[in-house]
Image 1 (tube, rainbow, N blue to C red):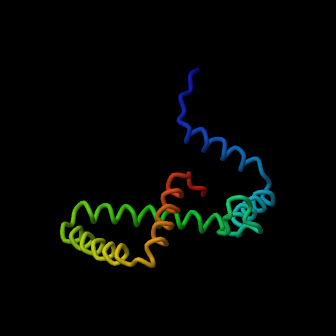
Image 2: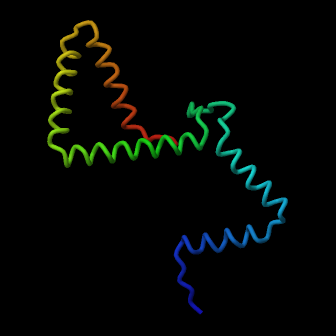
Image 3: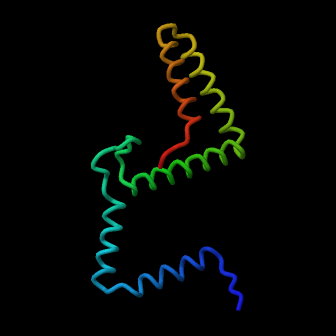
Length: 123
């Protein structure tokens, strides 16, 4: 007999088998522990420096994803929005580039941002 199961089907079967093998008390403890782990902020930041709970990290990732998706759609479909963004960026650039005092700070921040962009994100 040849079973061709997708990974998701196999995972569902294994998950059900594991949950069915647990006592009610053990299942409740497992669920409570999992939910607590997701909601709890780490006690120490560790090497990553992360101080958000896993739930907050997941939420933040989805917000970033949706915001980027919406902006891309807006930039791709709405020429008036594109024009407003171009004008705004031009005005901001002129103000930043013409400020001799803040220019070194701007350069440092841009370098930091580029370096962050080159490193993989830790979630």
